[in-house]
Length: 440
Ligand code: UDP
Image 1 (cartoon, rainbow, N blue to C red):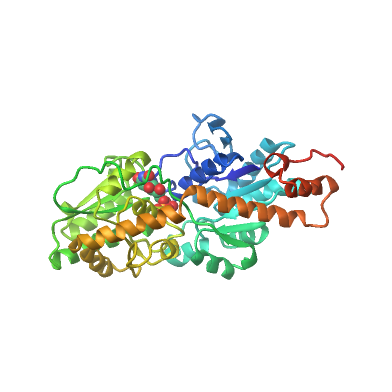
Image 2: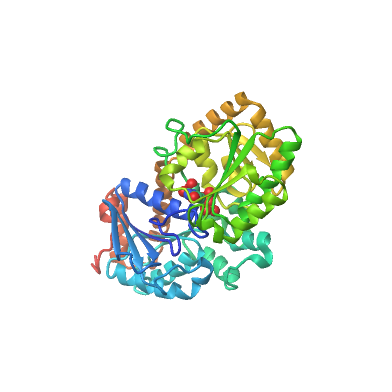
């Protein structure tokens, strides 16, 4: 299949940990690699955010990243990118030329806007290009939790639901999202669920662990934004001290640069000020951005990974921790409800609750046997359910279902409908490209 991935702000080639570079980048990269590994021809379109970037980067056979010029070639916060989506659509349509893809998979709502725009230019000629959408995050949920702090453009309130209604299929990453989509007016019949996956070659229990001292070590990993709830973990530290656990360090991983660059980061400053106010500054280290390849060793050095977001569309970090055999303390929100099984692969806590975090961390730190049991079960769960190969196979099935429903449409030209014969005849991989105007 010829697959176009659209990921406007989240390049699969970007460094991770900055405000707008996290799970979506990982998801798009790993899913594309796995689909290319299954023999598909995958192109990822992302916005050029630096003039140094080449127009096309061949990542591996069957996988290419295209940097589309849409707006200034510099970093622009994702919430300011909407005005450039029609130019991004121009870039998609121009690159497709006379050979549009068999399926377009858009990531995040604004990519959906651009993908639908580009796809519709072909629909007029009777050759619909199916659009599959993964939202990664929903504006309704963000607004509920962030209120006036939500910097999303006002148009998101109506554009995002219309993307959900207009696309051919939505792939939700967890069951919680399915309910949210329904309340947005997206028909449940067009929603499928495929989780995010983990790179199981990179994230595994065997391998080096970063050297550490004698103190217990808990780690929080993520973009340094308030909704990741790192302050809630810091607030748990004095409660742990009061409960008799004082030999503990909290390592905070994430941020747009190394620990020096964090001096200029308002969220980093807020977290350090809070640590000082609570008298736990000698317990808290802000590490800054950790490169992806070093992440497993960092995770393995922990007694527990703490994920305390206010809300979480999916949350890849708990899976990465579980894959490394480390137990997770997770707020019971969003994707974490599906991935972290309470008292089996980790401990779930109510959201926004430092005292529940302290209780859960305390229980884990006091009980090495429990930690080992949860770690083993987490590893088994991730290996059986969350490999990218498995996620890619499920995603491919959803692409195929989407295409077969499209092919059942009565109003398609004969040349297009011929594809159905190719599909049913098993020539799907190589045969399902455009028939280039052939009237059969
Ligand atoms: N990450 C990283 N280095 C950092 C911070 C984060 O490699 O310094 C990675 C982390 O390992 C995970 C991703 O960024 O793969 C964050 O994904 P998640 O779904 O947990 O959060 P999101 O950023 O999507 O909100």
